[in-house]
Structure formats: structure tokens, C-alpha cells
Length: 396
Image 1 (tube, rainbow, N blue to C red):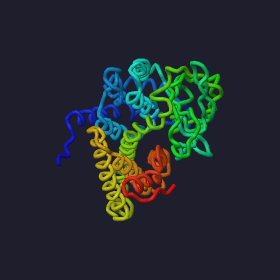
Image 2: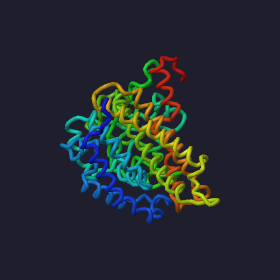
Image 3: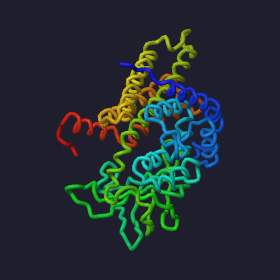
Image 4: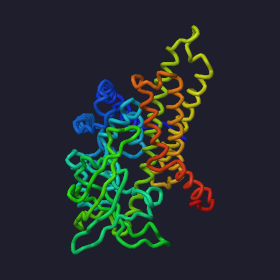
């Protein structure tokens, strides 16, 4: 069994680290101008996009023929782990790459004509896209079969009405990947009858309301209200009525990359805490000599190492065309736990200073908390493992 990563992956990791040091870390001095005050910075997005493209570190999931890097998931994961090991990696890279999931989905299920129309413009930054699946209660969320946003066929166009929540990038998007019901819900097959559209973001038909959040304010999340949005037939992605099943094609890569991001954030916090534990002297000794400080940090390191291995195993299985639902869900669940525990141990190591913004650990603690909720909660990942791996009765 060979755990050696390829020279290509090592090169991507090193180039990402150099990119972060040169272009991302300097943003610490400017943090109040975007993340703390919900100032969605298009100039930041455009600058980082241009810098990342110049460094050959942009659109890892998009095929090379459309301007992307065309990387396997294992290389993509290595890149994002390294990016998230900086204090501002989560903010900067997620602000600069809100189109990642849409590019991945279009690359997987889009027609050749749709890839030609949209993938290259997204990679080049000419198209900014939003993603809209989740809906407010009742329904939506963890129960996508209850989606009520409806698309009705009228002549050669579809007309959409409904509401979505947690729609990323809606403040400035000019396209939207939208899941809507196109036929009545069948209780026996509740996930059929939904269709994906990659539509023009017509602001005369879509009202956007910003959601204020605990963290990651520079990446906008929104509730949207859709009123008679007209979509031409050529904007249907995949097969009518099979939209949710098309989304399933992108779920395992999403879980793997989210997991490795969580590992990267945990490592960023751990590195800062270890350095602080070596330098901070209390009672004439560095606090890192105390097992009450050292053991939680060592435990966090072991958890991060284990979660990283699960993420890489899931990525290898996906890249080699093998089933990986078990590993992808386990990777996301374990990595979110490991990342959170590392950030929490780091904040505790800093003591009162951990609560102060100037040391940045509180930012990582806020960032990592999201990973236990999104894109799928820890409980839903465990439900998958219990039902589909252990064979236990469905609990919901």
C-alpha cells in the first residue's frame, strides 16, 4: 500500500502555499474592510481570481479544454487543504470561487453546447453564478423531496415561481443554477420530477434578501423570491425530471473537498496555538509544558491526520471510478469534528486572547463551525452511514 502523493500533487500543494503567502496572508491587515462588515468585495474577488489564474491555481475542477485545471479530486483536495491553512484562506478562496460547485456540475452533466456556452465564461470571470436548491420551512433543507418552487412549461419557455434560502452569491450573480419541481410530487418517488436550470439572473423577476451570518460575511448568503422567472428550454441542465439525481453526481466530490477544507482550517488554528504555547510563559514556564495544554493539541493533530487520510481515500476512490459514498460521508463528518476540535483547542490555548480578534483564532473558530452544518449536517451524514452502510432501518 503506497501512500505517496504524486509529484504533481506535491507541486500543486507547494504552489498553493506560495500563493497564499504572497497574496492571501497580506489581507490580514485589511480584514475589517470586507469580512467583519459584510462588505461583499468584487474587487477582492476579481483580484484573487486574476492572481490565482496567473499562478495556474484556478478552476481545478473545470476541464482543461474550457480553461480549467482539469485536476482529479485528490489533487483538488490537496490544493484546497493548503489554501485553507491560512487565516484568510476560507474567506478569500470561498469569496473568489463561489462558482466551484456549478462548474463541477456543468462539467459532469451539462451538454457539450452548455459547456461551451458557460464553463469558459465562468472560469474567465465573465459569468458569476449563484446556486439555489434549499428552501425555507416547511420542506426543503434536509428533505429536498418537499421542494415547492415550481417550473411550469409555457410554450417554448419555463416559468418559475417560488422561494429559496441560503443562495450563495446572489448579490452579484448574473446566472443561477436552480432546482425546481416540474411535475407533481409522487410520495413513492419524492425525488423525481425536479429539474435543474442554469438561468439568467433576471432581477426583475428575482428579489434578493441578504442573510446576516456568524462568519464568512464576505461570501454572501441570501433568501430569494422568484416571481414569474422565464427560462428558455436550452437552459435546462440534464434531463427534465431528473435534476436531483444529477445533483447526486456532485455530492461525493463536494463532501470530500469540504472535508479537506475543514482539515486545513483546523491545521491553521493548530499551528498558531502550538507556536503560542511555546512562547507564552506563565509561572516561569512555557504553557506548552503543561499537559492540560499539550494533550488537547496533540489529540487535535491526531484527529486531523486521521480525517485527512479518510478524505484522501475517498478522493482516490472517486478518481478511480469506485463507489465512495461511505468514505465521502465519513470524511466530511470526521473532518468537521476534527477541524472544530482543533479550533476549539486552539482558542482555549490562547485563553482570553483567543477571544480577541487581533489573534485571528476566533475567526477560524467561527469559520469551522459552519462545516458541522453544511453542506450536509453531521446527523444526516451519520444517517447515510447507518442506513446505507450498516443496513439499519431508515430513521426519517
